Image 1 (cartoon, rainbow, N blue to C red):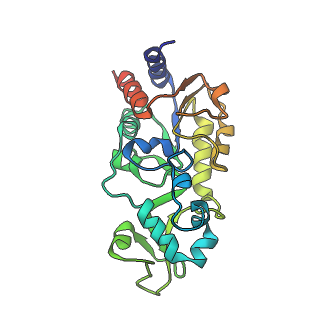
Image 2 (tube, rainbow, N blue to C red):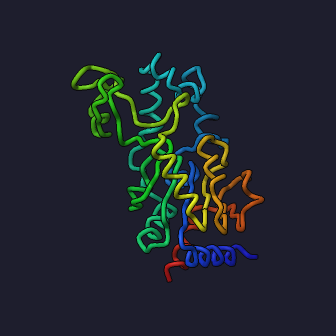
Length: 249
């Protein structure tokens, strides 16, 4: 099939599916200018100024030992200003609005799906928009972080404020995982985009899919390529944008 025929086929699958779920990773946001993690130009392969790998900085034990370095890294690489949703985010939000997308399950923490208008978004790894005091659990928003410098301290007790993102050595949120399992288990069509499916336990959620069709949109190979009905290696924004347009016609 030509690429256009494959996109037309994807649009037909979306239109016919009673329940479609999108499962996405860092590649969904790279077209918005957000760095991914594991590609050649990603954070893990390009950030060297701290003397330790970014994976170490993003661990719970490092956060507790050295919050100053953690927050220097976090503010520099995770709080990216003026980043906007791209065509992929917009397409998913429009499909949901038209009743053609049941849920978006994302490994991203940038909140771009919600900014695009998606409502049922399950953030497996948390979000940069929420924070809490490590001592008294008082909750804060990103506006609090933006008002502070260095390590943010709780206004009530002086404890260190932690972002509501899942660090290495921390478990994923049990409620979010249960909801994600339920959405994937009930899906007829599963669209996987912008992820190498190398990060567990998030990638392990796909074992719960027993529906009809799997579609993969990713620049590189994944362990699920052989199980997919359609595989795209092109721009995720281009593929989803055109498929959504055709599905809504």
